[in-house]
Image (tube, rainbow, N blue to C red; front, side):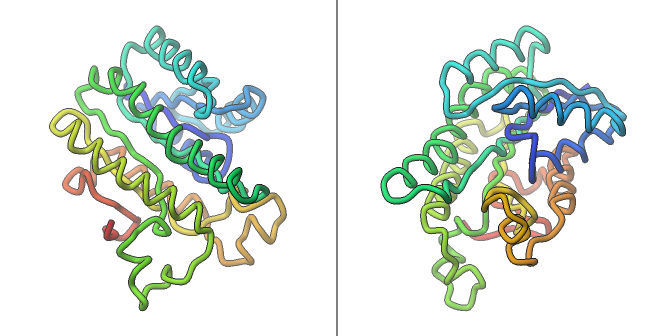
Length: 243
């Protein structure tokens, strides 16, 4: 039974992915969340329709001690990790200036990298290991520099910078783990999420945001090995983005 860990599993893309994975009868999905209460609520919600098995894991990607404790728990309970979906991320939209940059990079870049490195020894114990980093087309330098791209004039500069760093992280990890762990960056697209704020206008991006369940199907394809030929690439649901 493959063991899959999702960070930030209680909302947005994380929750939609957990829901999609829980419909697979042979998966064990670990719901890693900063808040134990939200993790438990997510577990209870998914248990109603789950065909696989589920468990929760306290994990704050901004806290080194929390990351270390999470690795120890997964190691003692499962002995290995087959899939790591590094999803946790923020926009720090309520902060400004240096604080906004620090918070955005602390979670999206430092947290993601440290989680990936910490769980790598457990991934290396798997025969079918995959590391999936949730990124964004907003972090593509190719799209950001293309005047004909819809992403050319987008805002959220700090967020874009952090996702560009995440993409470099994926390239470097892909080289470091080549032949042992398949590494992917995946853009879920613009979907309903509290990433931008709590109100409906923010969650729906003014009505433009799609269903995160559609993006979750793209992540499921990677989990199932359907896109192994595109490892160490920047994927989206219909193809590959330029870095």
